[in-house]
Length: 174
Image (tube, rainbow, N blue to C red; front, side, top):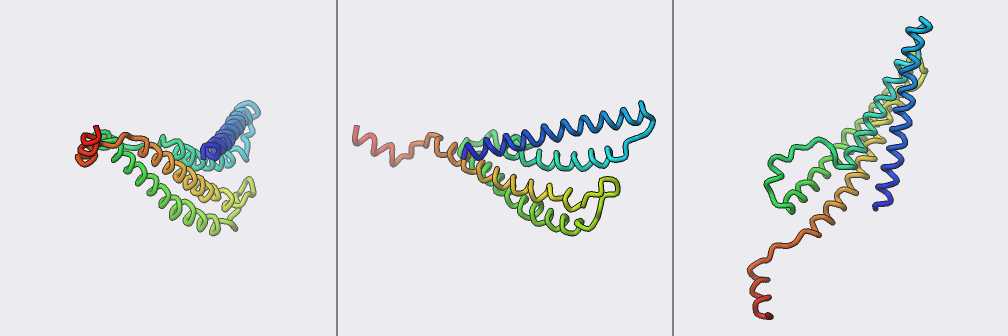
């Protein structure tokens, strides 16, 4: 499972860094063409907007996979680690449900509906822009399943409290 997580992390990191690099160059070109050549670039604004959509949504999957998403732990920090672990599994299950219903099903419907709509400058089907939603949903599900397995291992590694029954059994054998 760790190899799958590492492979996904590296692929998303490579994609995000590459897309960010392209965005920086396109933004620089936009500024140079506007202020130096006095002819603003026509494709740059649309390309930056679509790139930001992809970067944001795929970045969401990456952050969910790292379990670095925004969370309020004020109350959770007061409970034992085992309860916090079970709560974290519930959070991952909510992520899966959100990904299935909103990101994958909803994103697929939006993509299908927008497939005939063409962007004015890049002449790109808007459905392809919205494909970022279902792709991100699939990535979030994979990461959430990996997170559930990791959390389950963490819970199993926690020391168990000794129950009165086990305590009496150890006293008799000692």
